[in-house]
Image (cartoon, rainbow, N blue to C red):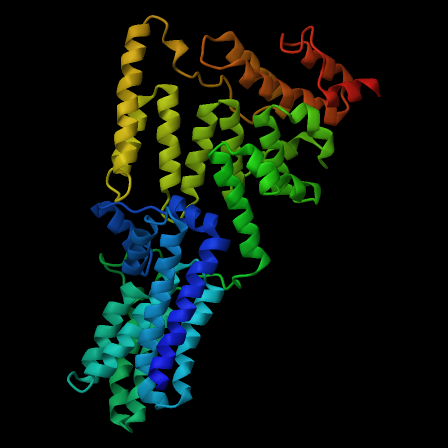
Length: 484
């Protein structure tokens, strides 16, 4: 077997291994990438991409990520990109390294990118374009003057890769010229290097909209080993989020070991385990099994970052407070690179429909309709809105039986037990579609908070504030607290 055939056999084996390993070990990371992505076929979105170099590569990465609903499609996409990088790297390095075993050095780029930048499709595509341009230069340098090719590299590369990679591309083109002992040809690269260095500094209508810090950019990625605690930890959190979104609370607690991790001191797992207990109605019975010290560990109060926004949305969704769930969904979208994301838009449209705010829901559905993978979603939601509108018209003058009411204060403006009691009272007084189960969840959060504080008086008042525990035996944790 020739070295070339052996090389491509090894490359194919690595691609298959990478796709199977990542799809089976990090499925929720890939699924979350689809939700965190955003791509619409509009001129405004393309203008947004132009303001975040490298424009075309980011645009293409966002286009591909919208198909990541299946982890196997996502993993195969990454494996194909890495395979193309290995193919182009082999074609570039073969003339430089000869026909021996040295050509296997071309396996290093896809291996390094696959292991250290596993889920950064944009960064991988930049290296794909890097080797593609270098290969094109090798194949056509005898037909085009070096000066023309180097200027063309700058113009193309400015939209295909970050600045350090573009500098490296030009330096490797110089190395190829030096290999042919053409010192005069190296002088042709001085102008493109100056062009690359000075163009972002020139104020013009073409680049003035690009933030200055984006004109000269670093590598723009995190180099984390595939098997690092960082990646494994992110996968676990995203698993919790996906299971909670689907209402698979028992799987989250026991099958995926959120309770076990919570007992070991994992703060994020603790919050998801307690949320699952609340959703299952077992929070008062099992609360004291967990290492919880205060009520702030029920959620992430006054925090705005990825994990906190995701969890707080689920926290209020579990209580049926759709307006606050909408708020956190919107915050989560604003934290994304594009200032919006598919999961946020889908959630906000659903919550708007639940509240009967069909005009707002339609605005989000119009945006989603311009993507490639939301036709069925948009069709189903519009049909649901028509049915809801018809039902509301038939129920006039009592539309509250269908439209979920908003809270009467800023959520988070009061301590958690006070906020829960106010929400429970507010929803209990209105003819909304809140159930006793939802009000019980709010009440339990308030009672548990007072119990954690050791506030006996407030604890007793809270237990008698509603009829939920009237003439009934109190849950286990409550009885133990009262017996102390």
